Amino acid sequence: MKYEDPACAYCPDTVRACRVDESEERGPGFCPTKVDPDSQAVARALYEDPETRKISRESAVVEAEGYCKWTRVEEIVQFAKRMGYKKLGIANCIAFVDYAKVLSGILESHGFEVVSVACKTGSIPKEEVGIADQEKVRPGQFEAMCNPVCQAELLNAHGCEFNIVLGLCLGHDSLFFRHAKALTTVLVAKDRVLAHNPIAALQFADTYYSRVWGPLKPAKTPNLPPAGRR
Image (cartoon, rainbow, N blue to C red; front, top):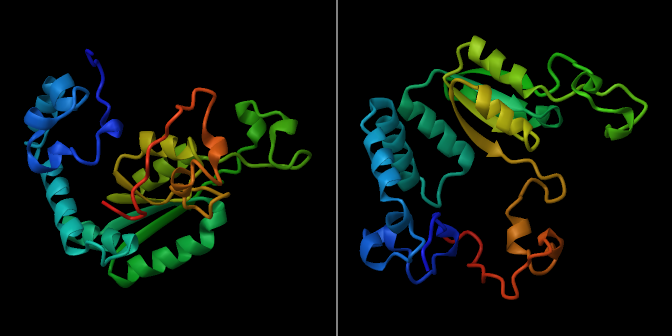
């Protein structure tokens, strides 16, 4: 079979050859090393950029030092310190304001200056982007649309060097990433049903959340590794 696209998702647990620098010898036919070595070469050359190189290095150091010891909040703090950032931005869902307050306080306790912007900033009515009344969460009431573009512009304008996304809605987070100038990480990915733990839908895809499958569900689905395994 001739593969045209990388498909790392289907690499067997017994292979994972890239971890031990054996992709060329043991990588499956859909391995990026086999399918598209040219793009890999282009990407590798980009690490010659000093900023990209620094981000990659400090991320790896934080991973190693905090492996299975530091929470993601602690990792953010340590990464930002190692990068020399002074001013951090928080782009939060308005339902996460209380958490944003705690996060802001934690970051400030480590000496950072913090800017925080909630998603409803600007109070733009949803009708302005073509939302009909029956399409609102609460029809018959004023609903401000989420405004991630403005969140990004405000954090840009106020000199944030590193941004933290805290519970933005799907799609709204994507718009924030598109418009933010500074490097951005995610602390919380919103999933109202799963208490903001979206991986649970994958862990229980064949049991409690089997509804996630579409009509082309394969007869045999992948066996999942134990939770937390890396």
